[in-house]
Image (cartoon, rainbow, N blue to C red; front, side, top):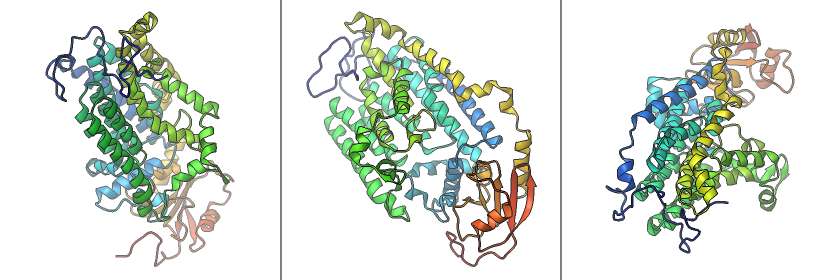
Amino acid sequence: MLELNKSGTDRSEPGRLPAQDPGPDAAPDTRPAGDSPSSGPDAAADRVPLRPYLIAGAILCALYFLYAYFQYARFGSPSWDLGIFEQEVRAYAGFDAPVVDIKGPGYLILGDHFSPIVALLAPLYWIWPSAESLLFAQAALFALGAVIVGRTTQQILGGRSGLCVTVAYGLSWGIQEAVKADFHEIAFAVPLLALVCRALLLKRYTAALLWSLPLVLVKEDLGATVAVVGFLLFVYGRRLQGALLAAFGVAAFVVTLVVLIPAASSAGRYDYWTKIDKNGEHDVSMLDSVLGVLDSSVKIEMLVFLIGITAFMALRSPLTLLILPTLGWRLLSQDSNHWGMVWHYSAILMPVLFLALADGVRRSRGSHRPWLASYAKVAVPVAAAIAVAMTQHLPLRDLLRPDTYRTDDARSQAARAALDAIPAGSRVETDITLMAHLTSDRTVYWVGGAPGTAPDIVAINLDFGWSRPIQDPVAYAEQLHPEARYRLKHRGGSFVVMERTTPEPKEIPGVRGD
């Protein structure tokens, strides 16, 4: 279980977590209390070179972007999310409200998830108006997390531990699966949480408070994580700061879910409550949700691998408390996509867990239990070895396969020909395959999700995985939009492009008049 005791003892002051012991080999810390120490362990820490970690970060950034780029270039996006986020960033870049037509004509995305921090990508999008810019930004943010995690580890543990943890974090399954899942807003939370944990470990408590504040702009649930940061500050002795931050986190969580999102939503509510209280068409009580948090082997496997990648040393650190809010809603959810090791949901846990590993090792070095002190000496290389071994079953392994770099296969060529048949500036209804390749200069709708709009183009991949095979694409387009007529414009491979032959409607849902 979570180890809250100070290294070398089994006792702590009632009502408080212990001070963070730098370990038996560290020089005594005689500085006065404060956030910017000039002596003691932090003075030595400041001498840790930054260059090796910048180089490691650049390599990881290149690997992440290389994988994401070639997945995109091969038309392999696994979901509609990349298209959604590009529409959002494109709107911010044009100083418009963040309307995402993929979610529905005129749909204000802040009524779905509250992630205004995504607006920070607008300047990059001015320079590089493509979904690829989002993939690069995410790669850079994940790699920045590696720099912070690795250097902080060396600062508190010394030796080569920092580079080992950089490898372990950089190749961790949570990060790799997030890279495979294309861009998501949680990319911003990764370096922010790394900075929060770094500040807590180095006793820079005001910095921890300040770095945690922007988390409430990343996603609506992270207010609960901010509240846990406040709790840690409180028990570390910063009672006023901790209490205020915890109150802020709780208030931000409640206000965002109860006020801000419903105000922006056309439905007037936060739709994702149904992930907890409904299983398909069946209502699920909160008690049943709580009792069912470990009712699946998928959930248990995910929990084991979360802690296992740190060689189980993260359990020795109070920092591990920071993963509980995210784990809480995922385990309560009735949606099986939230339970396992795929998708992007575990990425924000990685910087917390690997800095908890470093803290756990530091706390264990002086343990009176010989086996624990001995294990602490090898835990970091064990964690790195686990990450390297697991990579053979994770996305980045594909970078070793020549087929990964081939974008001239018949399917990709057919997809590009379909794109060429779709005029810039047109309104297009399409599926996931072409979606993120169209959002930079067209208005894009999700197929079947834009009734009454009579889009200029309906473009579909017949091999997309429809519940029923589409035998007559033109008839299918007219079934979607009985208010219009379509004709076949282009067909190549499994890709079909149809254009509207009737006049555009005078009023189009979600489109405001001039």
